[in-house]
Length: 200
Image (cartoon, rainbow, N blue to C red; front, top):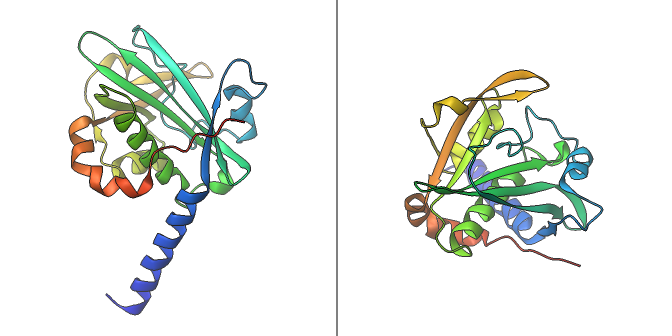
Protein backbone atom coordinates (compact mmCIF):
# COMPACT_ATOMS: atom_id res chain seq x y z
CA UNK A 1 0.00 0.00 0.00
CA UNK A 2 1.45 3.39 -0.98
CA UNK A 3 1.78 6.34 1.40
CA UNK A 4 -1.27 8.13 0.03
CA UNK A 5 -3.46 5.04 0.50
CA UNK A 6 -2.15 4.61 4.07
CA UNK A 7 -2.98 8.26 4.84
CA UNK A 8 -6.48 8.00 3.36
CA UNK A 9 -7.15 4.85 5.38
CA UNK A 10 -5.87 6.51 8.58
CA UNK A 11 -8.05 9.58 8.01
CA UNK A 12 -11.10 7.39 7.35
CA UNK A 13 -10.57 5.48 10.60
CA UNK A 14 -9.99 8.71 12.53
CA UNK A 15 -13.16 10.28 11.14
CA UNK A 16 -15.12 7.11 11.89
CA UNK A 17 -13.84 7.10 15.49
CA UNK A 18 -14.95 10.71 15.96
CA UNK A 19 -18.40 9.91 14.56
CA UNK A 20 -18.79 6.95 16.95
CA UNK A 21 -17.74 9.08 19.94
CA UNK A 22 -19.99 12.04 19.10
CA UNK A 23 -23.22 10.31 18.07
CA UNK A 24 -26.04 9.98 20.58
CA UNK A 25 -29.76 9.20 20.40
CA UNK A 26 -32.83 10.36 22.26
CA UNK A 27 -36.12 8.48 22.34
CA UNK A 28 -39.07 10.27 20.75
CA UNK A 29 -42.48 9.68 22.28
CA UNK A 30 -46.01 11.12 21.98
CA UNK A 31 -45.47 13.39 25.03
CA UNK A 32 -42.59 15.25 23.38
CA UNK A 33 -43.19 18.32 21.22
CA UNK A 34 -40.58 17.00 18.78
CA UNK A 35 -42.29 14.04 17.16
CA UNK A 36 -40.85 12.24 14.16
CA UNK A 37 -42.98 14.14 11.62
CA UNK A 38 -41.55 17.43 12.89
CA UNK A 39 -38.10 15.87 12.81
CA UNK A 40 -38.58 14.94 9.16
CA UNK A 41 -39.14 18.60 8.32
CA UNK A 42 -36.18 19.74 10.43
CA UNK A 43 -33.96 17.22 8.70
CA UNK A 44 -35.01 18.49 5.24
CA UNK A 45 -36.64 15.16 4.55
CA UNK A 46 -36.19 14.00 0.95
CA UNK A 47 -38.25 10.88 0.26
CA UNK A 48 -36.11 9.88 -2.69
CA UNK A 49 -32.67 10.23 -1.13
CA UNK A 50 -32.66 10.36 2.65
CA UNK A 51 -34.17 7.16 3.99
CA UNK A 52 -34.87 3.52 3.52
CA UNK A 53 -37.99 1.81 4.86
CA UNK A 54 -41.35 3.56 4.91
CA UNK A 55 -43.36 2.36 7.84
CA UNK A 56 -46.41 4.48 7.02
CA UNK A 57 -46.94 3.21 3.49
CA UNK A 58 -45.72 -0.37 3.76
CA UNK A 59 -47.84 -2.64 5.90
CA UNK A 60 -48.16 -6.39 6.00
CA UNK A 61 -51.24 -6.36 8.22
CA UNK A 62 -49.31 -7.81 11.16
CA UNK A 63 -49.13 -6.77 14.83
CA UNK A 64 -46.35 -4.20 15.17
CA UNK A 65 -44.65 -1.82 17.60
CA UNK A 66 -42.71 1.38 16.90
CA UNK A 67 -39.69 3.02 18.50
CA UNK A 68 -38.26 6.31 17.27
CA UNK A 69 -35.03 8.19 18.06
CA UNK A 70 -33.65 11.63 17.28
CA UNK A 71 -30.01 11.46 16.17
CA UNK A 72 -27.59 14.03 17.62
CA UNK A 73 -24.02 14.73 16.53
CA UNK A 74 -22.56 16.41 19.57
CA UNK A 75 -25.51 18.71 20.46
CA UNK A 76 -26.92 19.21 16.99
CA UNK A 77 -30.03 17.41 15.82
CA UNK A 78 -28.99 15.79 12.54
CA UNK A 79 -31.67 13.21 11.81
CA UNK A 80 -33.96 10.42 12.80
CA UNK A 81 -33.79 6.65 13.10
CA UNK A 82 -36.68 4.43 13.99
CA UNK A 83 -38.01 0.97 13.43
CA UNK A 84 -41.18 -1.04 13.43
CA UNK A 85 -41.17 -4.46 15.00
CA UNK A 86 -43.48 -6.87 13.19
CA UNK A 87 -44.30 -10.36 14.31
CA UNK A 88 -46.15 -13.04 12.40
CA UNK A 89 -46.36 -16.80 12.65
CA UNK A 90 -43.58 -17.27 10.11
CA UNK A 91 -41.35 -14.23 10.54
CA UNK A 92 -40.30 -11.71 13.18
CA UNK A 93 -38.40 -8.69 11.92
CA UNK A 94 -37.40 -5.09 12.48
CA UNK A 95 -38.16 -2.62 9.68
CA UNK A 96 -35.99 0.52 9.96
CA UNK A 97 -36.25 4.07 8.63
CA UNK A 98 -33.34 6.52 8.64
CA UNK A 99 -33.22 10.23 7.81
CA UNK A 100 -30.03 12.32 7.88
CA UNK A 101 -29.76 16.07 7.23
CA UNK A 102 -28.34 16.62 3.73
CA UNK A 103 -25.20 18.38 4.98
CA UNK A 104 -24.36 15.31 7.10
CA UNK A 105 -24.84 12.82 4.29
CA UNK A 106 -22.00 11.16 2.37
CA UNK A 107 -19.49 11.54 5.24
CA UNK A 108 -19.98 8.18 6.94
CA UNK A 109 -22.59 9.02 9.60
CA UNK A 110 -25.36 6.97 7.99
CA UNK A 111 -23.06 3.96 7.81
CA UNK A 112 -22.23 4.21 11.54
CA UNK A 113 -25.94 4.62 12.40
CA UNK A 114 -26.78 1.45 10.47
CA UNK A 115 -24.01 -0.51 12.19
CA UNK A 116 -25.08 0.72 15.64
CA UNK A 117 -28.70 -0.12 14.88
CA UNK A 118 -27.69 -3.65 13.82
CA UNK A 119 -25.65 -4.07 17.02
CA UNK A 120 -28.47 -2.75 19.19
CA UNK A 121 -31.22 -4.90 17.70
CA UNK A 122 -29.22 -8.12 17.83
CA UNK A 123 -27.54 -7.66 21.24
CA UNK A 124 -30.17 -5.85 23.32
CA UNK A 125 -33.41 -7.37 22.00
CA UNK A 126 -34.00 -11.05 22.71
CA UNK A 127 -35.08 -13.17 19.80
CA UNK A 128 -34.24 -10.78 16.96
CA UNK A 129 -34.38 -12.81 13.75
CA UNK A 130 -33.93 -10.23 11.02
CA UNK A 131 -33.85 -6.62 9.89
CA UNK A 132 -35.95 -5.99 6.83
CA UNK A 133 -35.47 -2.86 4.70
CA UNK A 134 -37.81 -1.57 1.99
CA UNK A 135 -36.07 0.91 -0.33
CA UNK A 136 -37.26 2.93 -3.28
CA UNK A 137 -35.76 1.42 -6.42
CA UNK A 138 -34.20 4.72 -7.50
CA UNK A 139 -32.66 5.38 -4.07
CA UNK A 140 -29.14 4.35 -5.01
CA UNK A 141 -27.51 5.81 -1.89
CA UNK A 142 -29.63 3.70 0.48
CA UNK A 143 -29.20 0.57 -1.65
CA UNK A 144 -25.42 1.06 -1.55
CA UNK A 145 -25.60 1.58 2.21
CA UNK A 146 -27.45 -1.66 2.99
CA UNK A 147 -25.41 -3.70 0.52
CA UNK A 148 -22.22 -2.34 2.10
CA UNK A 149 -23.54 -3.66 5.42
CA UNK A 150 -24.22 -7.15 4.01
CA UNK A 151 -27.98 -6.92 3.56
CA UNK A 152 -29.08 -9.19 0.73
CA UNK A 153 -31.92 -8.52 -1.68
CA UNK A 154 -35.02 -10.43 -0.67
CA UNK A 155 -37.43 -11.65 -3.34
CA UNK A 156 -40.46 -12.36 -1.17
CA UNK A 157 -43.70 -10.43 -0.72
CA UNK A 158 -44.03 -9.60 -4.42
CA UNK A 159 -47.36 -7.87 -3.81
CA UNK A 160 -45.54 -5.20 -1.81
CA UNK A 161 -42.96 -4.21 -4.44
CA UNK A 162 -44.32 -0.67 -4.66
CA UNK A 163 -45.49 2.13 -2.37
CA UNK A 164 -47.65 5.17 -3.07
CA UNK A 165 -46.06 8.61 -2.73
CA UNK A 166 -48.19 11.65 -3.54
CA UNK A 167 -50.67 9.32 -5.22
CA UNK A 168 -48.09 7.75 -7.51
CA UNK A 169 -46.83 4.17 -7.33
CA UNK A 170 -43.08 3.95 -6.70
CA UNK A 171 -41.18 0.71 -7.24
CA UNK A 172 -39.32 -0.70 -4.25
CA UNK A 173 -36.69 -3.33 -3.55
CA UNK A 174 -36.51 -5.40 -0.35
CA UNK A 175 -33.39 -6.29 1.66
CA UNK A 176 -32.83 -8.66 4.58
CA UNK A 177 -30.17 -8.94 7.29
CA UNK A 178 -30.46 -12.07 9.44
CA UNK A 179 -29.10 -13.36 12.74
CA UNK A 180 -26.77 -15.56 10.68
CA UNK A 181 -25.36 -12.43 9.05
CA UNK A 182 -24.86 -10.84 12.47
CA UNK A 183 -22.98 -13.84 13.84
CA UNK A 184 -20.65 -13.61 10.85
CA UNK A 185 -20.17 -9.83 11.21
CA UNK A 186 -20.29 -9.50 15.01
CA UNK A 187 -16.54 -9.24 15.62
CA UNK A 188 -16.17 -6.54 12.96
CA UNK A 189 -19.17 -4.61 14.31
CA UNK A 190 -18.01 -4.53 17.95
CA UNK A 191 -16.03 -1.28 17.57
CA UNK A 192 -19.18 0.58 16.50
CA UNK A 193 -20.89 -0.10 19.83
CA UNK A 194 -24.63 -0.02 20.39
CA UNK A 195 -26.77 3.13 20.15
CA UNK A 196 -25.91 5.54 22.99
CA UNK A 197 -29.36 6.63 24.18
CA UNK A 198 -29.47 9.79 26.29
CA UNK A 199 -32.79 11.11 27.58
CA UNK A 200 -32.89 14.43 29.42
